[in-house]
Length: 597
Ligand code: GTP
Image (cartoon, rainbow, N blue to C red; front, side, top):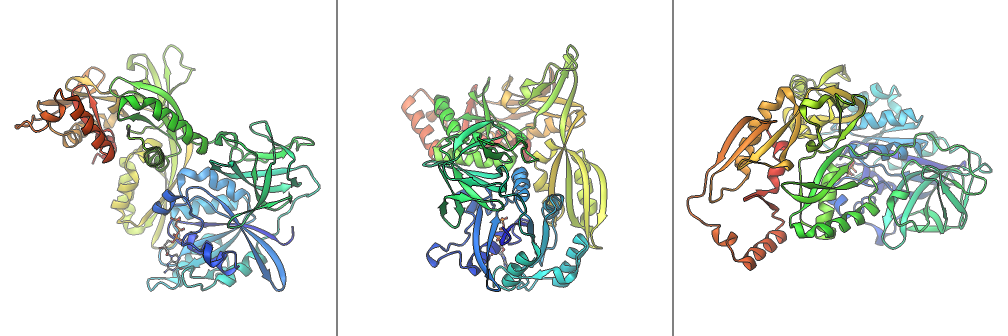
């Protein structure tokens, strides 16, 4: 145990976490030439393309330091706020963290919030100044920033380049010298923290854990404390580049477990594994059931594909436990599902996976957060509103509450004004403003989550010319003046286009929605009036003028085989359109409310 070190890497996106991990693996000889790939830890296709570590994994390195063998477990952390709970569990499985800061870009919001998480768990922080090879690097200034932030000595900051290999040995030495060895009682009852799980279609769910106390032997009967279920530890082992089966894993170490579980929902990140016989009395603190933050409807483009969509979603859920869905029906779109996601990125990932892995063509409706409504009749009973159409009648409504977040934004002092007006425009209230240096400012706002979901991040980048980083955490529900804006096409309400918005913005949003839809919906053979309404009251109107020449008639006429062909073509080209009444609505139109400006 005294020669084990468990650590993670905290970094802002693109500051070099994956590159540094590769370099450490290289240096410790953990990878053979054949196994070498560019970004070793990012091995999901989608992940590689997006350059974001979606799922955390762990990898074990052997390293001899001053003639003494050490085992170094690097626990990878996802780099996106949608997955912040997983980050917190990975951090809880470590004794130390490398804080990687780009020498050209300095400290960003995501670095800070993950650093706070690491400090809360008493991790030893090793600051690494990465990319010192860059001509644009500012090593002195950025070292000062780090010293200010951590209150450490400048000598503790390790200059490095994950690209050229500068500083890699110093980092390994620091990991061994500065990060404490794990503590714990190997003869005590088993307590292992689940910090991640990965679905494997052949072997079932692979659970990644860190043992805090006790030991786990192959074949033992184990219990997951949060779910209360028992399984046999069919296979256990350590994680090198490939899995290495072992007979026993002991206190302080990190490993994987295979039990034949086929449903990802049975393995919860943050859960405690103990032995079924002689179990631990206490679960490891900090377990939470992750809750979806963003909801949207997913509908098949072709109504006939509903059952196929259902089976695809069920399969997806087997390997992504954070996806939740319930069937719903929309007057406009027919049968589909209301799905809950961890955030917008997670939503995009699910949509892409449905298309790539399951060959489904789907329409996604405007995402919304989960509101709490209370009626006059039962003012104490909460009505959960995950779909705008579920909002009770305005006349019966007592109040509505919406989720709020604490936003942390770090920007250059030049852009403070712009960022402030954007946040105030997004119903934010400033709670704090700190100058990290003369140039860099940290701003904190309390803001409605819904305003973040709607185009916030893009606008932040624009108003700050890219010099702003952003992170957030939930702070609970607050009462808000919300109304539902409905959209009518050709006089018919299209429920899938309804949105809940703040009353003060309703007119403006209604007007912009009509304008945007006019842009997005193709002209057809007849005039299409677009109206926005609150209840029975029309608040805005636009008209899509009819096409003069009838170019689409032959496609949409009586010839059914032609129409089918066209649909096939659309499916292939991923051109998502949905017929609502007699109007063809393209996918972008369902997202129009996100793109208003
Ligand atoms: P995410 O996986 O998106 O969180 O990013 P990351 O933090 O893992 O960053 P990644 O390792 O993918 O590096 C981002 C970019 O910076 C890549 O283009 C790397 O080649 C480059 N990079 C990383 N380290 C260095 C370095 O020390 N010097 C230079 N010049 N470039 C580096």
